[in-house]
Length: 193
Image (cartoon, rainbow, N blue to C red; front, side, top):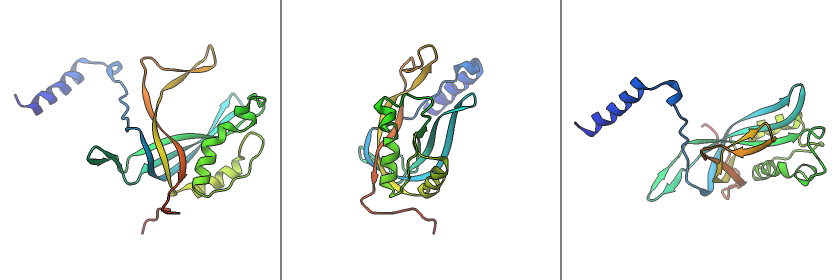
């Protein structure tokens, strides 16, 4: 029996004896990397509500790895995308603005890094950035080039009894992009020519 036949047999066994509960998510982790060149592929705006009350707003920034990442002697992951959620508004009526995380805008640091790296300006309102300003930001972010660090963080889920986010069991890791900065090559917004 060849290796290929053995591998296909393993796949056949999985499909013919299992149930849908046997399907597990397999996360593809990219190695921790510094100063990876990304192109902003798309940006979606998310509005998280608790009933009718708006609590939290964020953008989902889909980042495409431009040049790949050196792994040993090979360049890998070129064209792969990672999506990073970045908050832009936390309702002052919902969150404790006496705490510096909200009162001093610490929850906006990733957004500040991304906008600074792309030379985009946005004015603040209490709670973050207005929807109107964010729509302008989203339009300007399209196809911008930025550098960022890929890190691995624990996957967490909200414990509704305590209200806190806790690591899932068994421990799972995910990639995140942090520490945005401008590309030393200057403004290289990607264009399809």
